[in-house]
Length: 363
Image (tube, rainbow, N blue to C red; front, top):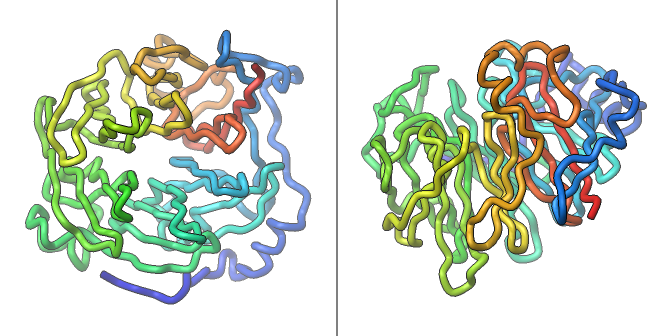
């Protein structure tokens, strides 16, 4: 495990300090909206109606939107966005933080460029921390302060004995079941956490509260305890006496549920490449790469599907690269989504030019 006292905050365009200050002070550069009436566009029905803003928030120059991957919200309702980022832009931050009005307040994490993926905020005592997962050639997980200082950072868990020797110290941009390609986190009551190796060994790893590896379950297979791309996960505590682990088995189009020790329970079907999970109150939010968000009640019945454009998106793989084909109120490839403190929803899409949509709850 590699530990540091603070993030390097490398210079972007040789003006890191100026760029961060600019992010806090400069007026935002607003991208053109698809239509003048978009701010009044409402999707959903009944108790799940939302006003759509496809261009919230904004990035000031010199930063650029890149492929957006995941989102998280802290106790102050600040939004954290992680980009996959471009490997050839090493100095560009991969993590951006926006206040509740959508104003950039800080940026950091250039070392995750080219592999930025999962990001979550966790309350630990009186403090909050960021947990970051990076794949591709980066292949690391890290615990950070909300300002970007590193608490710890580490590569593949050697104790699992599941990985090619390269993955433990000098990983390369190589994919495979013997490679470490972490994607997302879920947090345990004892201070530990679960980690999905969603693109690598297809394992769910368990770590203790100090970031030490404990055990794992899953692996490649046809379902019922094994996976094909276990991309996201969450601890479902909606029934307090029966907490369960929920894993998005993405390429199987399902959610699998497990007891807290990793014992398989059952499989929920009828999803389209489910990518991650968030839960607030009685409702579970599931972003699906096949062009929609699903909301499930405490009995795991679908009560709403938002922004659905499944048929059109499924027939055109290039839509993610062509903003002119995007339709107001419809999603292209939701890669992550989370509730904010007021019940609104933020959606990060896997599109080439990046997109963060805010769904403001109406009802």
